[in-house]
Amino acid sequence: MKIAITGASGFVGQNLIASFAATKHKIIALSRSPIENLPSNAEWRHCELFSTTSTLEALKGADVVFYLVHSMMPSSRLFQGNFRDTDLLIADNISRSCMQNKIKQIIYLGGIVPQGFISKHLQSRQEVEGVLQATKIPVTVFRSGMVVGQGGSSFEILNSLVRKLPVMVLPSWTQSKTQAVYIDDVISILKDSVSNKKYFHQTIDIVNGEKLTYRDLMRIMAEKLKVRRFMFPVPINSTGFSKLWVTWFGNSHYALVSPLIDSLVCDLPQEKPLPLIQKFISFKTFASMLDEVLQKEIKPISARPKRKISHRKSVRSIQRLPSVPKRNSEWMAREYMNWLPKVFRSLILVDVEPSKDLVAFRIFFLKKPILLLQYIHGNFEEDRQKFHIIGGLLTRTSDTGWLEFRQVQNKKYSLTAIHEFVPSLPWYIYVITQAPMHYLVMNAFGRHIAEVNGNLDRNEIANLNTK
Image (cartoon, rainbow, N blue to C red; front, top):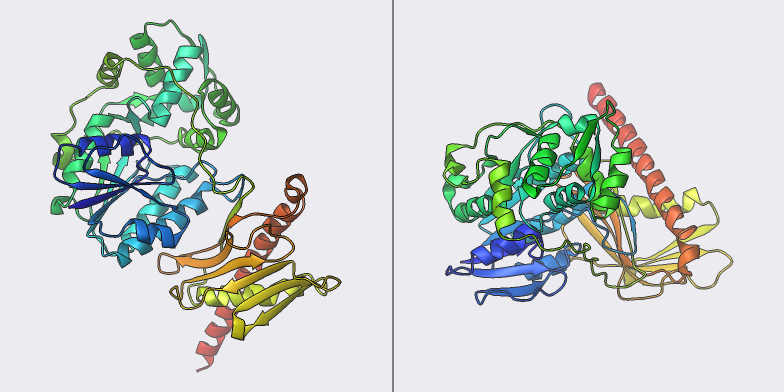
């Protein structure tokens, strides 16, 4: 059996690959950059998750796919958008590729859904679940809190904070309920679920039932490290300052820390593990997990590696548009081309050459187009339209960038995105002119779609009432 692992270079991915080394399974390790020291039964394949073509090719021949990707780090020099929209787009690419490759099972590791308030970070995990489940492929959803082990982002942040800070000010959110689970237990459960019909179409919390708060995690960590730490609770629940000091002293990136800290105000359920996974929970307490980690000698924490980008001045922009379930993505693309010149009046002209599938954006006093797009005809379903950026005064390359409009999860969500665009303007000029202008234009287009779709809905209702 061939098992593809997305996020293979990450903490869980690396441990999962190692666990399959002594098995007969063939492992396909997917990542953007090459992975060294893979076991003999594993092969590395390049996978650009933002590209449907790349993910489709990377999953060829696979039977089962592990989805271990969470996109909270920037993938280009300039990124416009947020991690929720990025997660949605990547999950859609994987879903489309799984369906076309006739994958037999998708296994996803997300986050535990809290009681009451839910953060944007955990909302995003739920959205990903929905996108994967909409494929009708058997999906197994696992949810966990902090995964304890050397290399886990949340664990390493906690470890670094307790080691570096002799005095710790504890906001109110440190009293929130949480869960921790050891990496080996997680891996055992993930392995057991492969092609196991007992797990098909199941959503399972990987928990050990221990009742913990974030303050408890810090206290137990200090005890196990044998360091004295002064902890002072304060009646403040703001996460803004916490993000800064966790970034500074936690040896991490703000883009990663910010959504994680926002999630700490949520109370996670503290239930016991389901019978299906109970036998795999060997570590019943956070203290026992730390004993195991410390036995293996924690190495010095290195800075988080920078993600490779295809061009040092590349741009990625992803925006969520209002849902238009009665329209398709071709309508969105054409509405955008019709709407854009009306907004800029006579300043920007849009010329469409249907015979050549070309769209040219021009300024009336310039002979050359500022952007030249080519519609990629016939390669995609009706819920995705793609245009390659093949020229124009505002682009430095003619073979890297593309613009797309797509609908996700049976038209529940709508997205527009520009990928790998390399501007010709000097960078310091681009970031204060073209970049914010594109962001504002797409936000305005989103409002236009909402207005048009709302008007159409009311008209249709009125027509129905007159019949």
